[in-house]
Image (cartoon, rainbow, N blue to C red; front, side):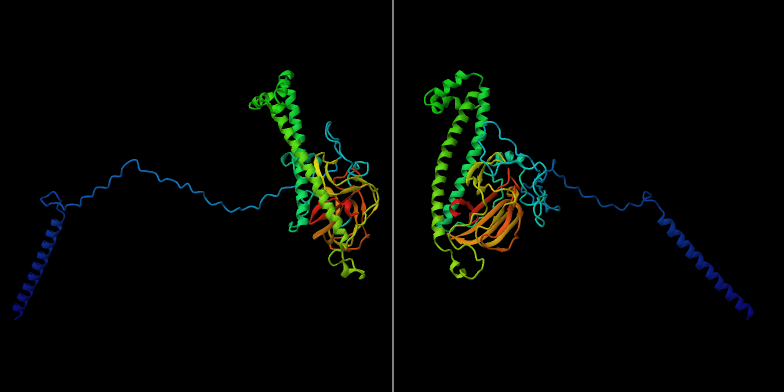
Length: 422
């Protein structure tokens, strides 16, 4: 029994070893098979062939940029501020030889060397940033060269000309500014003509051209004008320009005189008729405004410079003198020409210390009186004043050559001759 059991156990051990050997042999065979190289009789696995890339034609066309303008970039900085030169006390420059005689701008006298009298307390003095700062005399020629019709004195806004009377005043203002333009252009053209005449060199050829036919319009002149590049041609062209300017100026002066007579006639009619609302205000003791009739004379003294076109005594260019100058002494009292409301009181460029009073309606237009070059202002904007009330003192502030009162009458903001009104 025991022997049989031992034989059975030995047989089991033999079968276990045989199975393990077979498993090891199979594993070794598999390892060797997997390590055989591709060229050892085993065909390689074919790889996919890459597709050909498309060939682009050369050169490639470049994109065409758009010609449409780009929108402007938003500004990141505030616009630059243009500074007006600060007013500098300057002695009036004497007029150049040959210039038109300068009418008196007030009582005889010159600007004090130490400067102009300071404005009253509370009225700001002109500075580089003050609107309406006085134009320096040295800048006037350049301003007029760029715009012969420019106003060197501040002018207020004007009302729309909606009535026949207002349109007549507006037409007069337009003609006067055209007259100023022509006067300043003629000064420059005459100077250019004199310079061209000095360059001619030979007087006889020029005389022959000027006397051929009908002077500057003769056939010889026409031929020379075709060659403006020559000294003779330039002289003839400038001579023709001066003649044309003189002819138009004469027409404009005649037109201005005729319009001035019509405006003055209307003023007489307006003063004869009561102003609207005057009857209601009569006897109430109020300072209602203009009620018809003549205006008060604002200061004592003679008229030293009338209304109209003149060669400005301070700037030495042609300007419309928008009022009259009354030769009163410095410190003399200035009174309101009529009852009304102060609409402006302070520094105003070439007018210096300047006051304007609105008096209501006259001839269907807004009636205003203004007072310039004051030494001291005694009223304030918005204040009601009565006729004859003292509103300031005579001085020589602004573009003045001596103490005097510059007095204006304006209809709808446009200046008219004050003489028919006072």
